Length: 106
Image (cartoon, rainbow, N blue to C red):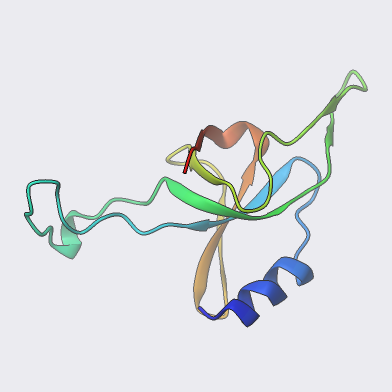
C-alpha cells in the first residue's frame, strides 16, 4: 500500500478511547534454516505496526489508562485479540490497550 493511502488512513481514522489501529505484519514464509513454508501452513499474524492511537481510556474508578505504545511502534498482540477490518482491500486490526503483549525493539 502506498504511503499516501497510509497517511490518509492515519488522519481519517481515530480509534476510540483505549484502542489502537494496527497494520498486521505478514509472517515469514521461509524458516531460519531456509525451508519455504506453503500458504496453507500460515497462521494469523500476531505482529504489527501501530498506525493510530486512541485517547486514554477512563476506567470505572475514574483513573485514566494511557496507551503503552505510540504511532510507529511494532508490537506483538494477542492471537485472538482485537477486531479485524478491511479498508481499501488492506486488512487492519483495532485492538484494545490490554491486547498488546510486547513492544518490539528495532
